[in-house]
Amino acid sequence: SHTKLERKAYSLVLLQQEEEILLGYKKRGFGKGKWNGFGGKEMNEECEVQLEKDDLEKIGLLEFIIAGQPILMEVHIFKAHRYTGMPTESDEMIPKWFNIKDLPYESMWPDDRIWYPLMFENKKFKGEVHLSEDEKIIYNSIKPIDIL
Ligand code: 6OG
Image (tube, rainbow, N blue to C red; front, side):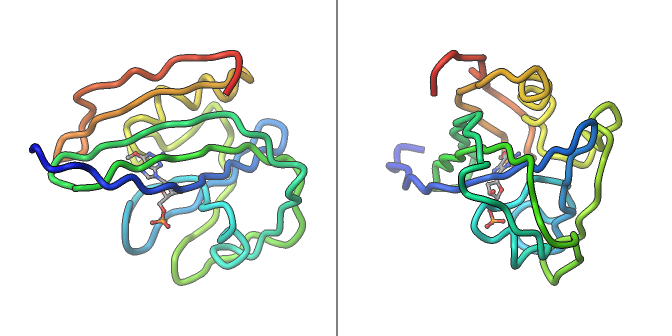
């Protein structure tokens, strides 16, 4: 469409402990039925895990456009290593640790197959992803970069 997109900023946090990563199964709202990282500030409310601000490492910047939605999502992606608390189910999310070699990609956003491997190689990345209305990738420019 020719309508100007409204840009909205989000954060996405991936907590990694050696070979395992904490994902949350979204029970409602945007991304319902998918495993994803946690929305930064809300991680405590989403699953009762507390992070330290100076432990958050910025690893990616992705821009998403989904066909039929008037929003450009600017997603700032962070990796965290330390946490306190006990991952606990909330109204929003079911948290679960996954081995990084055995991720549920078929129940994740399709772009995750592109940038998770970069994250596990400790590369930073940036790019734009366009999804069709049925959430398939129709354009992607994700690539590793040195500086974010
Ligand atoms: P809440 O509505 O839960 O914020 N997000 C995406 N994450 C991935 N991996 N792929 C996408 O492709 C995404 N689009 C949005 C940003 C939504 C959370 O989901 C992330 C936020 O952390 C389309 O508050």
